[in-house]
Amino acid sequence: MLRRRARHRHADPARLVLVLVLVAGCGGDEERTFPEGVAQPIAKVEFLAEAERICGSTNARVEAAADGLVSTGDQPPPAEVRRAVIGVAVPALEAEVRAIRALGVPEGDERRVEAIIAATERGIEQIRADPVGVLDGPPPALREAGRLARAYGSENCGFPQG
Image (cartoon, rainbow, N blue to C red):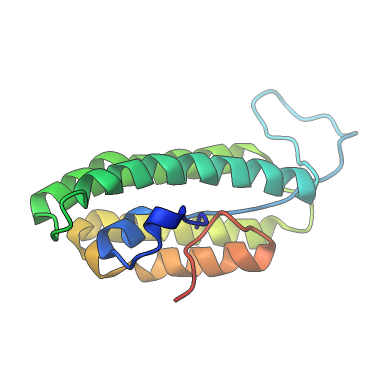
């Protein structure tokens, strides 16, 4: 995901999980005409730059929620984790997916970008099914989305390795 600020370098399971993920993509031919409401493909460089901005914004919101959870240094109560995950992290990830989808995808990269988005959507569902499970780390589908996003060229989207 995001490169963490220096104060976030310690291994905190709640923060690690709450600093959630996504995606990068790419663009296409600007000369075609697209119906109103249909995203026009953009160049990969432009797509990645915008996806990085979107992910950075999402990460900042989720990190702020995580900071509130871990401010005491103790493991947060499950009810608070659930509230932060369902109330902040899940909606932030859903908005991130919508925003990245709206960017358009360059011809030839549709499968790669869709795989990242699909893995992220599966991860969101895994979080919904077990919000407190994030204390053990990101769910498998979000780890996969992060791996795919990094392989695609993203620096800010996806979970850090390790």
